[in-house]
Length: 132
Image (tube, rainbow, N blue to C red; front, top):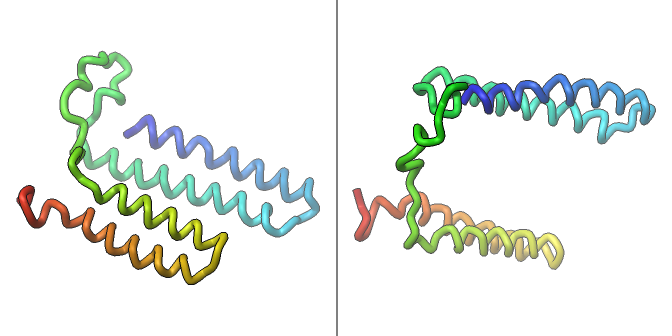
């Protein structure tokens, strides 16, 4: 996690410098002058979160400069190849974004369908054949 933390935190000064240059060059254009420092803040929040997580977990093979590829072998997480819920969430997101072009009423339908699909995805291991 240390590599990812550094990756994000090294970009914070870059975005702050770019924000300063942009603010001076554009004559104080409000959207970019405010938006670029906000990007710096968001990148800093991600880097800070990854830094906190890095303190709580053991070092990974990626954090070892002398690490070998074979050290990262094995299970990397949980993936449900039989799950249809990611497709339902993606379809709901597509309906929401289509609603931005067609009409707001369609966005509301997509949000409701998305909430149902996300609930199903979160609780798929709590019921049925794969309940724990």
